[in-house]
Image (cartoon, rainbow, N blue to C red; front, side, top):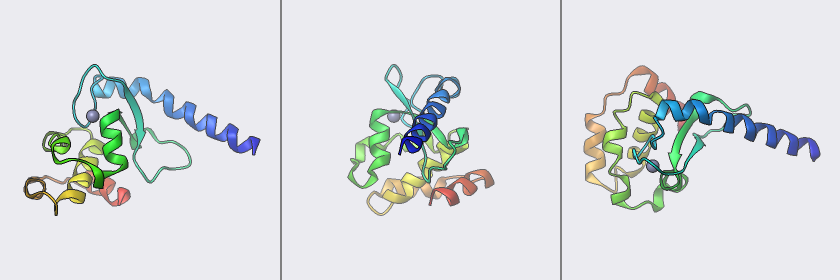
Length: 132
Ligand SMILES: [Zn+2]
């Protein structure tokens, strides 16, 4: 039990330690919706590995974390930023955006259109394969 807790704390501190590099990568703006001057947290894109991996982490605002935790419940207007984030130079941001678009494409015509225009390079496809 205690060992499990230690492991949990250790894991948490590793994830938190990614914050500095993520702040640099994201220029302290939410990596999905681009909002500035809000609290940003490290979000591990599932499936979460036993050892935290920097490349699996996004730096996101609370709203975007809420959306990713329950894509089905998200509102149409909350998701429009995907049209920008799907072109991100950060492969994980791009892949996550495409992933969300795929989840909502049957609900919203515009999401389907965005997906038709998406450019999926090998790295993005590889990450997408992992997320699914
Ligand atoms: Zn956001």
